[in-house]
Image 1 (tube, one colour):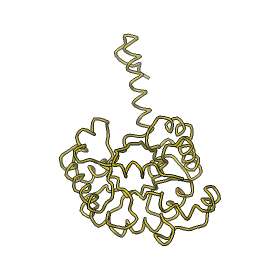
Image 2 (cartoon, helix red, strand yellow):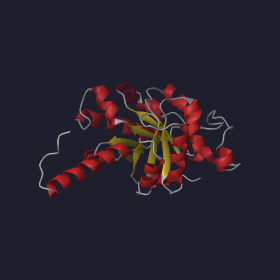
Image 3 (cartoon, rainbow, N blue to C red):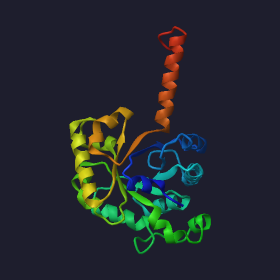
Image 4 (tube, rainbow, N blue to C red):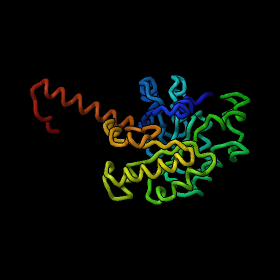
Length: 256
């Protein structure tokens, strides 16, 4: 059980991954072999349940890609379920305050760092010594995605146990009433990344397109979360359909 993302963070090497939402283990297996640094099994917006999330986490781990998982909310049971499945990073959305971050830390780590339950299947699957080294390999990733969270970033990221921060630019832009690539978002990114540097917590960002990297790379985010399996399928399908229409010298699709 070794978290390769920790080495990338230590070397200050940017990394990237995508979200899994389809709830399909087969889709997970395909994308886990596509050379992303990590895949994030999404129980917040995706179609996963506990069983299918566990299957996908193990499918990812079998390839050497780092499995992360996002819970639907900041609840000890949900966090523990993903950790027992074998994720090496748990992503907790809508962290708006120091109290929110402290609650997530308590759920994610064994004592003395937290209050995670030592029962469950993890020691059976990963070895009797799992609890002795899990705390050193698991990344707790807090999501900052509201104006309130941006203002509280310094306090949130100063909480011991917070290992990384992901800025959810889509929700943040919605909360701020601005464009996802607008100057207001860039200012918010700079504020959070600066708070992360002071707290020694790497900060990454969600982006909509690869080209978005050029607009924020001067801020040196630690990592990027881009797209998801449903978005990739839609784009691939749209591109293929357009190519077929062009090859067949048709300009429009048939009406239903």
